[in-house]
Length: 201
Image (tube, helix red, strand yellow):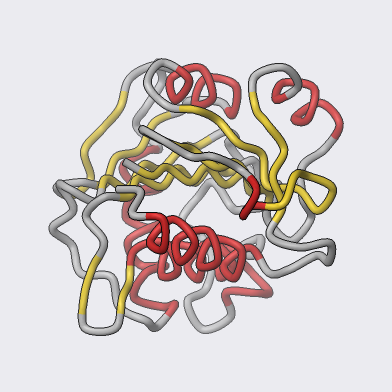
């Protein structure tokens, strides 16, 4: 299983944004929609071996954690961002009822929402996966020996802050797809293509 953990610093935690203006009203949830497409979609196919966590820290009620489980996912992900954003909106609507940090609600088969924090998700992931932090200054991806369940952490268009990086120190190896700063969705696509070439499930 491949896991991608994306922390969104500004992603709205209430379904009050406009589908007609995702970049301007949602805290850049459009970036997260593109990440989901890069993680799951193939040409005429869908990856079942992928899990994606979107952890939203924008106003008004952070955090909100959305978990997409490839093996269970029954909702259709389309290349257009608006239909994917509708799924996120529905999850946020149901997530308004949540009070307990550890409780998770199933929105649709394979899509879950909770109030888990970035740190909570890292701890959960470390139980059964090797953790990697995607960073420009990391070891080149092609030089890393991957095996078993792997999980990759990355930020949104703003990246991760010092506190986030402090949580990753000592538990995640830094790896890089290149020395330049690339779009988050492109990074996810690069990782998927590289793991495909290695035959990593």
